[in-house]
Structure formats: C-alpha cells, structure tokens
Length: 172
Image (cartoon, rainbow, N blue to C red; front, top):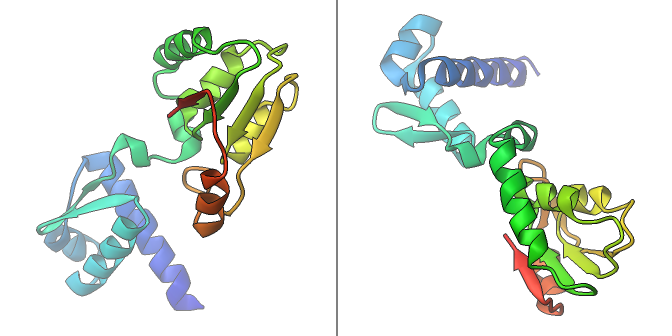
C-alpha cells in the first residue's frame, strides 16, 4: 500500500538523519519533512522496537553499535576480533564440544579454528554453521525462528533445544 511505502521511506529518512547527525529531534524533523510530530514519534517507536534507534525524550539517538546490522558489525574492529579469536582457539582442547554464540567475534573464532579440529561445535547461528562446512568438526545447529538482525535462531524451540545440550566451552 502507499502508506506502507511512505512509512518505510520516512523510517529510512529518520535512520539517514541519525547516521548523519548522531541524534534526532522530533520537532525539527517534523518541520524539515513536513510531517506531524505524531508520525515521527510513531516511526521512532517502531525503529526503537526493531533495535534500530533508541528513543529519548524529544527525539532519538542511534542504536548502540551492538545493534548495527550483522554485515556492518563484521567490518568493525577486525584486528581486535582476530586477536580475541586466536586467544579463544588456544583454549579449545582437541576433540572438545564447543558452544558458539552467533556474533561476529565468534565468526572470527571459526576463521581461526584449524580446519582439522575434530571436535563438535554447537551453535544457534546459521552463519557460524555455514562457516564450519569446510571444517572436520561435527556441527550441531540449534533451530528456531531466525532473528535476522543478529542472524541467530531464537524463541521457544531454540531454548528447548539448548536445554538438552552440554559443552566443554562456550564462547559468547
């Protein structure tokens, strides 16, 4: 519908302004865009609920870096992630069962993990599981609804599956 397209365009404009200015004031944006303050507030509530912005009195701030999308986070602090990953891999015993979170630092851990690692890796991240396809490790994927922002399975099915698993090490 036209309304949906307009709402999406408004939200894109709000996110662009947050990236550019580092903050957003409802009154100013309403005047600049020729929209009601109520429309802007509604859009900000939805952006906040989606983890893309943080509502504050009178406006909004950009979401924390942790809320940046997965692809963007992969590019942040690559050298630091590689150092953390190397230290983490050094803690993994041969044949161990390792539980990996779905973050970009754990993806760097997979990159640092020798392809000959013959243990088991458990994850709720399809991205982590796919990165392990060329490793000797057995891979167990915890399933559930995929939270696309973080690229991990979540919800009751994921929680239930995780309750029946144990590991030698967990990297979050």
